[in-house]
Structure formats: C-alpha cells, structure tokens
Image (tube, rainbow, N blue to C red; front, side, top):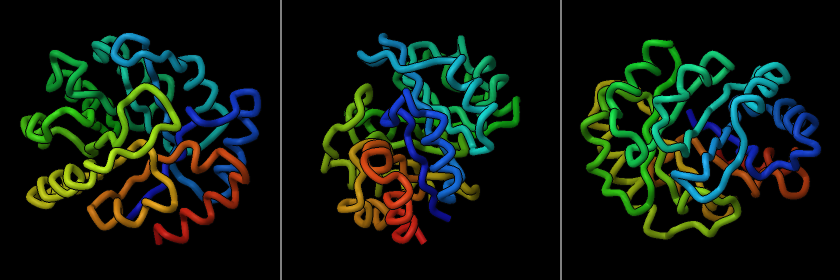
Amino acid sequence: MMNLAPSILAADFCELGKQIDIVEKAGVSCLHVDIMDGVFVPSISFGMPVLKCLKKRSKLFMDVHMMVDRPERYVEELIKLGADGVTIHVEACGCVSDTLAIIQDHGVRAGIALNPETPVREIIPYIDMVDLILVMTVHPGFGGQSYLTGSIDRIKMVRDMINGQKRDIRLEIDGGIYLNNLKMNLEAGADVIVAGSAVFEGDIEKNIKRFMELLI
C-alpha cells in the first residue's frame, strides 16, 4: 500500500491548523513532521510544542523525521507528545541501535534515514530493527529543493534490501517529489511519499487528489 505524507515544513504556518484540516478531509492518513535543530542541518524548524498542538488538532499518523544531532535525547518526549513514528538519521547518532530499541519499546514505528552522500550499506546493521527506511532525495535542511537524479539507483538498492527481509518495511522518500517525477520513484520501489511544496502550494485539496490518483 502506498501512502502520501504531506510535509508541514511547506505549509503556511499562519494557516497551519486550517491547512491540516484540509489535508485530513482530503483523505490523507499521514502527516510528515520535520524537526530540525540547526546543528545536524543548517535550519531550525519547530519542535515539541508544535507536535503537541498537531496531535490535539488531528487524528493523522504523525510521521516525525528527526534531523537532529543526538536524537536519543528527545525520542521519548516526542513519543509522549504524539509521535506515531520516529525516524532518526544514521549519520546523527552514535548509538543507533539503542535509540531504535527505545522507539520500538514504546510501540511506535521505528525508522532509519540516510542522506544522499551516505552509502546505502550504512543501514544494513539496523535493518532488523526498523519498520521504515527513509531515503533522502535532496540534501536535508531546506524545503523546495530540486530532486537529486542519482536517488533512483539508491531507492532500488534499498528496495532490494527490503525485499530480502521477511518483514514488512516501508520505503519512504523525501525531497523534490512532484507529480512529474512520482512515477519513476514508485517504479523504483518507494511506497511512502513525502511531499511538501507539491501539496501545500496552490490548491491543497486538488494537489492531494492528483497524488492519490497516481498512488492507487
């Protein structure tokens, strides 16, 4: 099953509540929440108070992507505030296995992410501990970037790794995804699509409908 996960990083924060209502009514089941600390990535986005408010407002699955140095410091609090899934970067954490174990112990979806320059083999030691692998298709830290064309081969490599497992592991992609490049990413093996600008710029409901038509 393929899912669309609109990224609120591209939303109008002055209208965030209203826009999330539109997303939910349009039939989306998952919301992507990028948490950036200004250390692991150059930008600072938002943190725990925003997640807490989102969870009160919406019943959507909260897919929390931690672009944060030493994420082990925050995962338990994020889960307490409503994260339904927590994804950490293999590059950001010196205790990846322990942190994934904490996420799993709390009964939420555990994910591992890797940056475009990180060899895919870096996630092999953790594949038995995750429910989701996130392949960044742009350099993390800023919305609205152009898709990195070399990502297709990396997605295929991760899909082959997943197919060799006996568990259901989702393959999420994040960065520069639009309707005009969606098909090639789906064919490469992606099944959770993070989209920011492509959803929140213009008519949100119409944008989601177009995505959904291709994800069926």
